[in-house]
Image (spheres, rainbow, N blue to C red):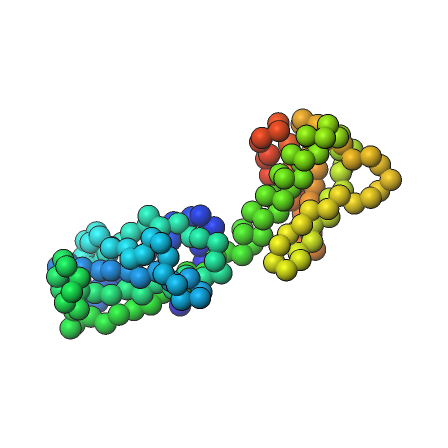
Length: 181
């Protein structure tokens, strides 16, 4: 089973013991897709009642998935594995749609900042083409025979094959997004 988690959202690390034991100690090992442990690993879960152990302090990193191995121990030193509880695994998958949107917005902000630094003004509506090359989203100004312009309070849209994202530049540092434009 896997759980989808948005980029930089808390991973819901949770283990419910079948017998409701509240005197156990749970250690979670978090590994990237290549098998390397995350810097936050291991994570020690807290009993929140009735044998349910939780922690949500680790944020989802920019990997396609994270494998969490839950190990149950009888002692606080995490040296005596529980004989009545086996290790379990859970996979946390990065919500790719959100990561794509984040990548698009990063590229767009860089493009808008570059154009703003050049004192260029985008026409309304501006045409920006977004393409995926080797897992990197690139925003490219389409040549429509109109000089590109950027100014405060201008709205532009990013059109990809899957979705359109409306972006309003509020000032040189702030950009608001409307995914359903």
